[in-house]
Length: 156
Image (cartoon, rainbow, N blue to C red):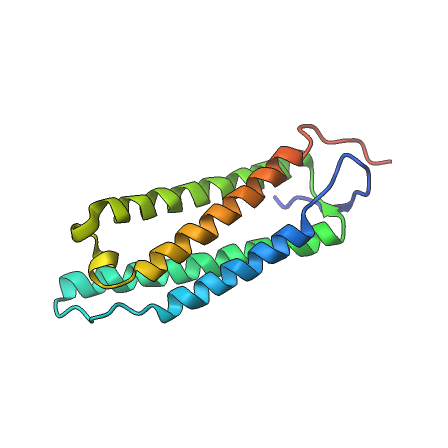
């Protein structure tokens, strides 16, 4: 059920601890900025206010989770604690897919312009923060996926 973390200092295993730590800080900053980007002016109708609050809440929580994921990976990479290559690559793919989905959703909100609830409620800062954190995160996870070996090396 759980992947076993092992100390792999072999040349086949490497990580990006500094890049993940930096990305964690950027994602944390994005979450704080998004958290301060309250829907304004406050919509008078619940049909607009409730979706605006849900979008706002999901954006903030997602960016905090993204920051936590990068921080966790940074710490594990720094300590040379890696799971099997298969598990590491699967994990990287999961983060890549999550970031791509967020980027698609942000693109849809911007494409809708005057029909977009986040734009109508003045939450463009939240959308920009989501875009920036997801792009940077996508690049970091993509590099990590690329440098992770395809097959596990035997531990001596």
